[in-house]
Length: 262
Ligand SMILES: C[S@@+](CC[C@H](N)C(=O)[O-])C[C@H]1O[C@@H](n2cnc3c(N)ncnc32)[C@H](O)[C@@H]1O
Image (cartoon, rainbow, N blue to C red; front, side, top):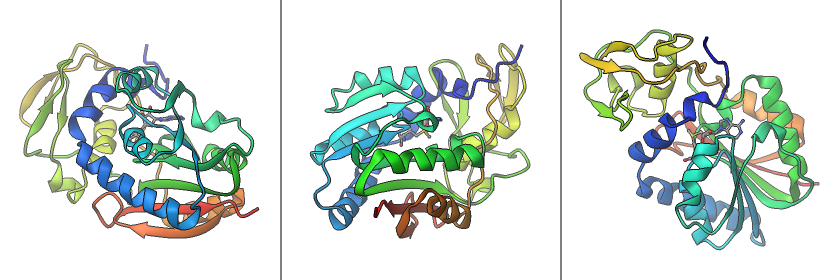
């Protein structure tokens, strides 16, 4: 039986993978930009909610800037890992699409493609409405994502691979097919393995034989382009303050800064 649980991809696999393929410097650099933008647009901001916080890498950097932080993620494993990192934030397991809070936060953040994990546009719109409600007046919402579509075809020859502790091997560098953007390799991996019960099987990946120890049934990330994000934010009541290209190191990576003016 193939489970359809949406956070399945993260159990074990992502926790291990994400902390291996990301670096503190990357989070530091991005968090510095975010803190500057908060100071610019809502200088009195104190309370911050980070949804889809993963293992707390962004949270750690934002906490250094002195915000009172609540950080949530749908994955219990990721939250457990975050809690081991001595970060000054309140961590809990929560689905951002079910966010229930009224005028509590000065800032809400959703980083590193996490918004694209929502299952469809209706849920995206609903999540934005809930986010809007969770913000105080003048509250800011930050969301980043890459806006080009994932590749339709599986990749061909990865240049090298990364081995995870659980025996799974992920692509380390898929520049042949991903224009150098590391984020898209998750999309490609999902395209290749989606819906297949590959547990216990060996697959050929980049010329290597890989034993898969986990089912991978996640769909590729939702395609969201700038226009759609603009429309969805406006529909939820947000005023868009800034749209920055190149947030995550490639031109297609975009950061939206939106505000609740009412
Ligand atoms: C690519 S990771 C990014 C994690 C973190 N924001 C970072 O920058 O390190 C995507 C995260 O989204 C989380 N996620 C996916 N769907 C979610 C949902 N509906 N509610 C909350 N978190 C979700 C996953 O569990 C995962 O931690």
